[in-house]
Image 1 (cartoon, rainbow, N blue to C red):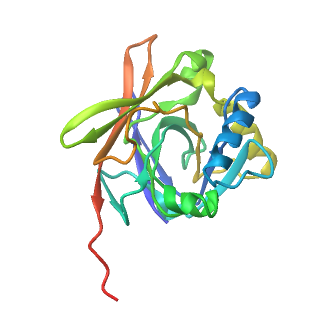
Image 2: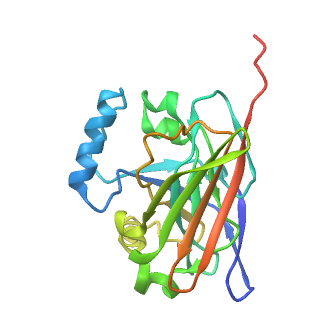
Length: 228
């Protein structure tokens, strides 16, 4: 398991001894749009989920606060997301996250692809209670880096996704809304004309009401060639 530490706006910190990590999938607020997305992915060979929204368990050690992600080949990429984190004192935190996914493995099983790369989380967080009244106004953006040049690939608001409260209720019903649980939200659409297979990813969760942002960034580092 991994231990994550988050700094809050007042300068205090919250520790999280990660026990469960869950990745939401097909988690758009409009399930009609989700159905269309499922159909698009099916044309690419990605198997359709049995139900939407979906929820995929991920190995706890994959929740990381890191600036480097090792990639086993050239077809892995991130996704701009938010994360709901249950701190060791039971408080609900909201932070930025990037779900680094193996796209080649995705055609064999989404759950497998989610377990082939880390969920990178920011080192800062907000108390969910502090931002929940304006949750739909919060922004989510991502940029990719190619040869030192950064390009925006995702831009949206949390109104496009099922809310942290929705997922908190789901986790509570499952008995999983407990210290050490991390839920990754699912993502917003990517720009079709931007190459997602990048040298680096940067994700920003923003609060327009205050001007505050939470950011993470990491380099994608190719693994050495195997022997044998």
